[in-house]
Image (tube, rainbow, N blue to C red; front, side):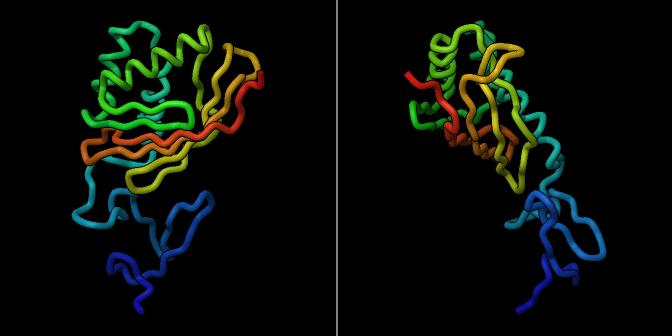
Length: 164
């Protein structure tokens, strides 16, 4: 079996954080994407910006501004699911975010660690709480983007939740 990837003649290996690297040379994120021509214009760092925009959307309290952010960020058939709720489509996504904001009024979502991404998916930890205080909720999301770079799916997991 050929141990090379992409016909480059160098063996793949994993770097810290499960990022793929190659002996004898670097390979960009776009070049490493299988299943077709290299993706132009997307890098691993693009996920940092995408996820910050995602969190900014969760923090937007004005319903009209939030709806515009959702429409800009999410694919039309975008889907979000976590253990407590789910939504599909722009109106449902904006409504779900608004309901979460009502439940946790005055709190904000912040990135709580590094973004780990490959291909069209990323995982990241977030924290929800009052600014400058211990977070009330901590979660872990897996985000998948579509070919246009818009959010297609988010699978959410809750690691720390308030007790009654």
